[in-house]
Amino acid sequence: MSQLIECVPNFSEGQDLNVIKQITDVITCIDGVKLLNVDPGKATNRTVVTFVGQPDAVVEAAFQAVKKASEVIDMRKHHGEHPRFGATDVCPLVPVANISMDETVVYARKLAQRIGEELNIAVYCYEFAAFSDERKSLASCRSGEYEGLPQKLKDPKWKPDYGPVEFNVRAGATAVSARNFLIAYNVNLNTTSVRRANAIAFDVRESGRLLREGDPITGKIVKDQQGLPVRIPGSLRKVRAIGWYIEEYGIAQISMNLTDITVTSLHQAFEAVCRSAHDRGMRVTGSELVGLIPLKAMLDAGKYFLRKQQRSVGISDAEIIKIAIKSMGLDELGPFDPRERIIEYRLEQDKKRLTDTSLSDFMYATASESAAPGGGSVAAYLGALGAALGGMVANLSAHKRGWDNRWGDFSNWADQAKGYQTTLLQLVDEDTKAFNQVMDAYAMPKSTEEEKALRNEAIRKATICAIESPLAVMEAACASFDVIAEMAEHGNPNSVSDAGVAALCAKTAVHGAYLNVLINLKELKDQSLSESYKHRAEKLFYQAELKEQEILQIVYGKIGL
Image (tube, rainbow, N blue to C red; front, top):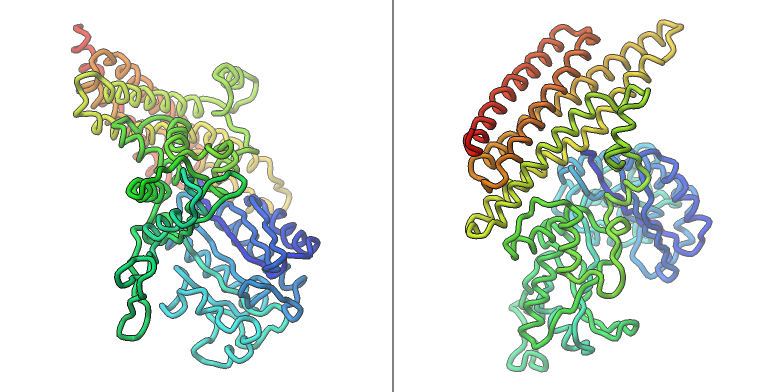
């Protein structure tokens, strides 16, 4: 699966829409990124832009945006309510899918270095990208703001992480970070009282409430030995919260910022507010998500509520997300369309995939005069069907009457099967992509020696892709045998024939992908690499042969043959 990161740069211009458009235009020009939101603020004179894509493309788009901002924004003329010290004030990178924070830090520092060296802008790295604890805080890095920069840059303690120590009078300085995803999230209450809502907010937010003597509301504030107010911390880390009244809906809400969803997740915040509301004689009626959310956050929430119901989590993403929406009442105040609110789904809207077509359309596309989709895509799809059948038996077993104490084990098997199913379904399209890449490489010009060299290298890379794609099919389909074997042996006996069909599908997927590996190996000139691929493929092929026979023996035995 593709790695995805989000970038949320804040530019010091929120009033001149022409300036803002010039900045966002350079972002949309970069292939591999999608602009999700542009939010200008007149009072703050600041615009928050959100875009997402694959890491290298996001870094390039961010650099071009910072460059354009340094050309069209003059900090000498800037005034606004929000703290700031540069034309591009902050530029955080956020891991969204299939990428770690450590990897994101590498990209953030790469971006910071380019800004410093190529644009001559002082750059400070903060949060996870910081080089020292003193610079983790954005407020600390930005202290003194734009007006204090000339003096700050003279202090050796505040030498920029990248870029010059000289004051860039026009662009100021920029802060670059890697941080976790921030979610703006409101929970609805069956009350109109802001005071009661605030009581809940104080219960849950990390900063909690002030400790008072006697009466918790009117009592004297308790102070420590340094004379600072003592606080009673709330139940949720990395959460800011306040209670407010929403005139439009006629209810009070708990408005929260979940600043690190790897520490406090969406469903954990929801449940904490539910508990506090119940303890204070109120009830949560629903909730509201502001902006977009990563797919994983919604899936984690749906799986949490499914497990509370002792139901299998190895079901489709669509069903899991539906459970999350209904459990947290995300559609109480208005429709919640996952296609518009989940980042990954927004990115996929313009993509055309074989797996989005109907069964008949896929069949007719396969039967057409085009060489793709072909045997590789069909093999991957058969593997996905085999994994899906294994997952089906697991889900039926999790719901079997009298097996209630075993639902958790079967849920885990179903979830594992779903993972193989998802991987193999993606490989349906990857096989066609690999074939097209080979065709494109062979179509490259070869008139000069330089063109021949470029063409040969492109053919080599494309051939490796065309080998590794079916190898990935073989590996995923082989791995799915573990689930299928378990379901044949211990799953719902009424579905043992389905486990048998699953084994046949998995074996056919492995065998079909093996043929694709062999035919593409003929084009690989590197003999050592070719032997390595062949050895891997043969090992998987024979492993699948044995697994299929073992499972079919169990199936026939249970059927009574």
